Image 1 (cartoon, helix red, strand yellow):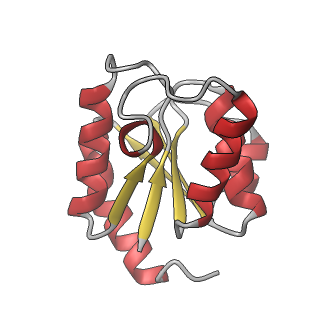
Image 2 (cartoon, rainbow, N blue to C red):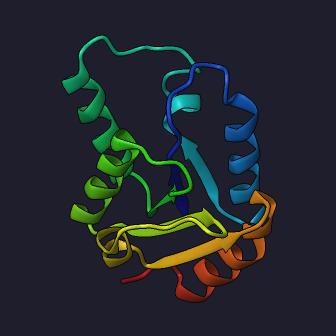
Length: 136
């Protein structure tokens, strides 16, 4: 089972955080995919925003679920959530304790996991997804 992990594009400035989140997903027993790491290689690759979003949609479609950290607000990552929702993919929302999210995000989320430290999500992520087998 493959999970599309979202992050804001910050070049290599957030490489460590991306790698850690991907590792958490792998340790929970799933195949991880990260657009910034796997397609863009931490560099701005697409000059055409339409081509960027077309490719993102293609990659989301190849995955079983999308993981979205709602702690920081982001338009681009929210678009990826919308794409995943329209494609019928499971949507996993994670967020730091105390984060407030809109009801619209709650409405598309299959599960919302709160954490104190990002590594705290591993147990909930693995347990939820394995029990549900990613089936709708």
